[in-house]
Length: 56
Image 1 (tube, rainbow, N blue to C red):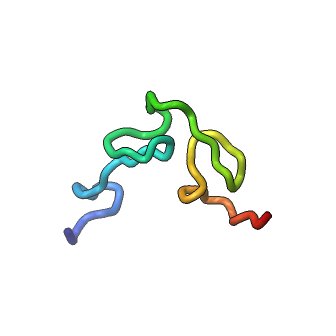
Image 2 (image 1 turned 45 degrees about the vertical axis):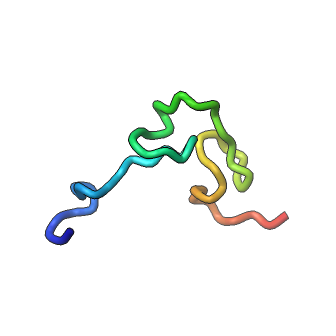
């Protein structure tokens, strides 16, 4: 849809970075906490990591 800002987008879904499901965010997720294999931080998985990729 055109004519609106991204933060007002009616097509935007809240996707949880913890469990990957739509409709809620990680801070209110009831699933077990996940850890990122890229940066080691809690609350998101490596595909959603915003930090530079670490090669091991």
